[in-house]
Amino acid sequence: RQGGITEQILLLGYTSKAHIPDLIRWDLIPGVYQMDFAQALSDYCREIGIRHPIHVKIDTGMGRIGIGWQEASQVIEAMYCLEGIELQGLYTHFSTADAADKTHTKEQIRRYQQVLAELTEKNISIPIKHMANSAGIFDVEGVHFDMVRPGIILYGLYPSAEVDRTKIDLKPVMTLKSTIVHLKTLHPGETVSYGNRFVANEDRIIGTLPIGYADGYTRMLNGLAKVWISGQLVPVVGSICMDQCMIDLTDVEAVSLYDEVELFGNNISADVLAEALGTINYEITCMVNKRVPRVFVKDGVPQTIRRDILNRQINANSDIY
Image 1: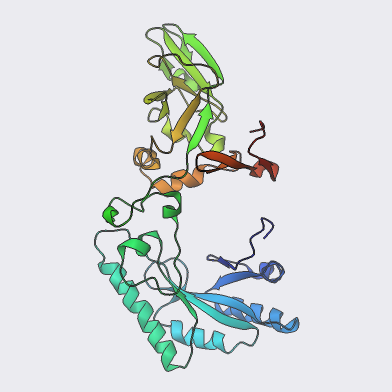
Image 2: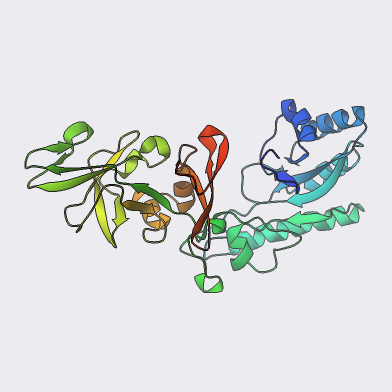
């Protein structure tokens, strides 16, 4: 809200009872899956003379949060009778929509539709139904319902290697960049970073980047990472530090201070880093934390720079990064 968003905001995960006043103050819609929370929210809303919308979360096979689908219609019926809340939505979440085998996904759909049918028998109508995540949006038929919930595809990345990529053409929109802030020649026998993990066996040109694991460029990439500069890949050498890391620029022609370096983006996909770490691309994008300025670009031109760590926004024409 403080960022200027005026549309409805749905909280998909857990909200504590202690934050009920904040829900009302900021006009936020909670995902609800526990009767005691629904009762507490209803009681609070009745006291101040309002009805507040909720979306009910049911578990159809994710095994995370949500009312079990077998008992969902009975619990929802009890929530429906509470005077201080309005049942605006009903949702669930796929666990394997990004897998080639859609057997479990189809079973989740069947369970969700069964709950809807049971609610219809009880004369309970819920206006907004939703269950499609990124993979569900383009790789599962018939699950768009009233709204969808894109996640990783907002970054222009595919949910997995098993989805049908011919159905949608995605291009990465997030690039993590840095600049060379120091250059030096390393002579034979000299080392780089903590632990002396990299030892030069000949003269090497080493560049330092002002980014490290405190920014989300994890130390687990030691010995695995490469970056993109001047049209080619070069290795990250030595241990990645808290605020800095070093790259071997020996094979790059005409490198200079303040040259731009891509850590992932169009030339090095987040998928590549994810595979190296044995994780998913979503974790790679989420690891980049608030210390890193966000530069919003339109038609190749920077528009706005957001620095969350300073809690302020600056014009893209500023030289303060």
